[in-house]
Amino acid sequence: MSAQPHELATYSAQFERYANALTAAERAPRSVQFSRFLASGFPDKHQEDWRYSDLSALNERNYEPDVTTADVSPIALLPDADALVYINGHLQDAPSTSRWHSDTCELPPPATGVDALNAAFASGGLRLRLDRDTKLEKPLQVLFISRAEAQASMSHQRHRIELGDQAEATVLLDFSGDGGERLATHFFDVRLGRGAKLTLYRIQNETVGGTLVTRIDVKLSRDAKFEALTVDLGGGFIRHDLDVVLAESGAETIVAGLYAQAKNSHIDNHVRAVHAAPHCTSRMTYRGLVDEKTKAVFNGKVVVQPGAQKTDSEQRIANLLLSRKAEVNAKPDLEIYADDVKCAHGATVGQLDEVALAYLRSRGIAKDVARAMLLRAFALEILDRIEWPALRTRIESALHLPSELTVDFEA
Image (cartoon, rainbow, N blue to C red; front, side):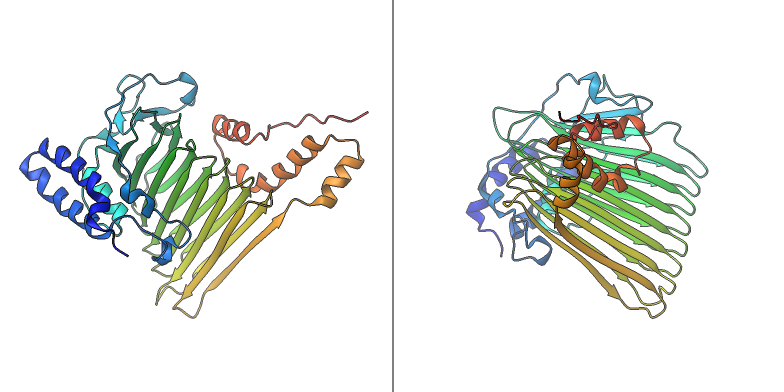
């Protein structure tokens, strides 16, 4: 269902002011993208991929593009890493320690109204390119910080990561907010050469007023390896798409994630692995902790294209509902067009094990500690994959799952 023109009037006024500051060469392709956005509006539940995540309420919002700069807390910067810091979409020179950025912007064809809106307004973002046989000496932490404004505001960025043959890097995409109503969109284009390896972390801890849409498109060459770990801790409306194409033989992807909502948040993860060549491997493991009046959506899909023989693929999704008002929609999906493959998938939704909880209580362990022990055990398969000690400590603290539990024996 397309948006009516009057519903998007505020975006038209914003784009007119924005485009007036551009050169003619910059304005023309962005105007094309904005026309596409006007034709489609924001995605709604009539589109299958957005069935549980309707963004059409944004059609009549009034977001201002913002120009905020502000200080960054040293606590936000992780040790033993280089940093790039963006506040409301603007690069901050002072706390940034990496040279991997650029203001150039590329405009690939949009797939949805959100894509088109992003392409029309996108500002500069991360540009990481490593030559053949090059290894990034330190992990790169890229902070995207949303700061509160008096007026509801929006920012849009596009990013590219390219690793040459046998190159290697670790990158953390670190999203956080500190209040206020905001809309942010981020699209990433990732290309790995032959034998290259990328370890990517995506951590999201927006506030309840934040709407964040991210999409990461990854293409793997022969024997390349892509490992991703994503953690969602908060936010108002969060939508994340991760698409991995295993384009050449021997490519491998391992994707793991944990979502643990804040009150009234809506978090939607869509993860897709496309096996387009033989002898490729994909692993997908997600865990959800859904509490209070929150909603989680997870859609995992594996597509095995014709000719992708000897594909080895596995999806595992598990959720814990921690309150009667919480909701989970989890769907593993397989499409197989080859006949010599090994593919498995499964999804579960359950509740905290009351028998285990009662057993721990019977041993004199306080209820809140016993509960934390069970939640930690459920999330441990994901947490153990974090090889960056400072990052793991920060996530465990945010989840109220301390690294070492102090058992409080009741009298």
